[in-house]
Length: 485
Image 1 (cartoon, rainbow, N blue to C red):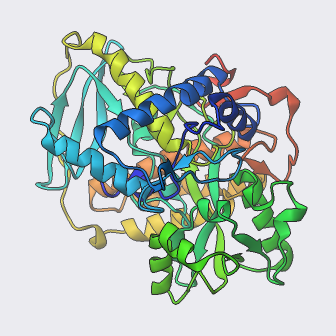
Image 2 (image 1 turned 120 degrees about the vertical axis):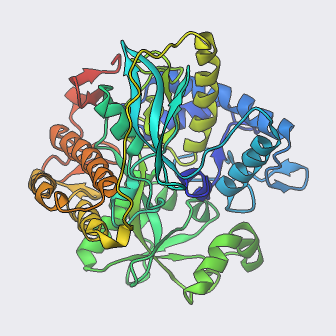
């Protein structure tokens, strides 16, 4: 649970709970950020049910940060109001996961199996009745039978060399769904977080958007605030705009990074509000209250995913998906900051409520297969070398800015790498690489097919939005389809 993107989430969770805010304002901000591809019904559900789910967490004992008697609400890019709740300053995800984990431990009817990898869903006659999973603990395969399966495996931004995600975030759930015949939608939309710490060692650490919400500046190599000339909201423009602006400056000035400056802000407030960032940066010799902080965009969030309905349901009875692995239509072409944790809460709840009707009804009719993997150590294979090559190609050719030539080069690399995979002694790691290939190919093909720039998908050969593609989603199984898909 601690290697999930949720656990790593810093900024917070957006919800219109303040008396000067409203679900309507949250709705409008989300729609604007989504650049014409949001499912308005899904967004309405998110912003109206979000405060209900937040209050349930509070009632259960989760204590969000406060200023006096009121919740300390952060302001982030694209938001017109302060509405971002946070915990531990900037360790929101960690606090939420730890809190929910403690509740699970108190429950007598929940069993948690950690260090398992699901590699096949049990599907027969359009009904999902469980899965096969490999255990890292005893190197054995297990069959799990269930009336209801909920995929909550996170996204796939970890397939990029420069990423804010855990290394395990390579889209396994999307591969499972796609290989089972489920549509995956809008995979070309990879959100790059504008401000990840840039280090010569190649290590990456997220500098939450909330830092800019508290007044931090973005500076170029000459110390100029360049975002003021790019967007009226300057550093608080939507993420796709800020990432594109940073990339433009880096390209024009031929530099590897830009800088965040917090030196003009209250030092004690920064140390308290962003304790984790302050302490982590110090380990690299950077005092964020005084020094310029080198930052550059990094792959952060997979906006597309498994096509689901408004209750998280898929085309197979008994199979649901929620969170980053799913595509509900909430985020459109670009996710509004801190809407992701809220989406997890709202649509997981809806999936659970909807699935209750299936309890005791899904019966398995499949013969239970057995998968056996060889168990040689990872470092004794070519896995790491091939994976690193793979991540480098994604970073170079399928990054913030793409074009047909770079995308086709990446696709050719992926298609030609199969020969090397044949020599990997360990079948388990071979399957991991195949999952990498599946997700990468979906992203690349989606990016090739969408001949426009919209949200966090930017094509230099198609620099503007194509009005014909307004409100049009792409399914990689059924072709281009409108929002009703």
